[in-house]
Image (cartoon, rainbow, N blue to C red; front, side, top):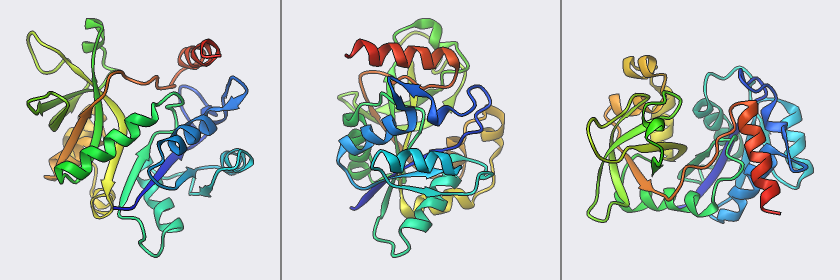
Length: 245
């Protein structure tokens, strides 16, 4: 397999406008995400930028970016547009969609998601971590994944994603981490599908794949990386970077 990592980024975030260029310890957030992806060392990394200023920031840091239409409906559509722009020769058969708001993502987690795709034969692979706080299981802003885990409890098959507490009753809940690894043909099929009923109800794009009969495997990692969606999240990211030195 020959993976490529694509990072979708756009300026028009509702809760944190301009967040790809938000300063975290003197470095733009999108540059930090690009650096973590490069550290994973699984293939070339390209930022799929919705605006020119994002591409310029990445290129100034020594990275590669491609400009995509600003009005694309989702990150999946953005990475598919970028893929067709940078790999017209179909050299890469696996596409890693790394969200542009995960500046502290562990490179090892990126590699783990790729391992899940390779070893299970699924269409798509993703990540999850056990929730430590019981309150997070009831937090609609924390997406939960319902999966059947293997004997070791480290790799599984996804059955559902939801904003509600799931599964019901005593036992652990697992937070979904928004990183996806697609087989190229699976990505092409996914973006050709119309938004599905459960996707629109839960406002979770990955349900479109499950409703269409596509398989999603999941790799368990130790922690949920900080996703920067609000000004408060941004301050936490800055504090974390400062604490690391």
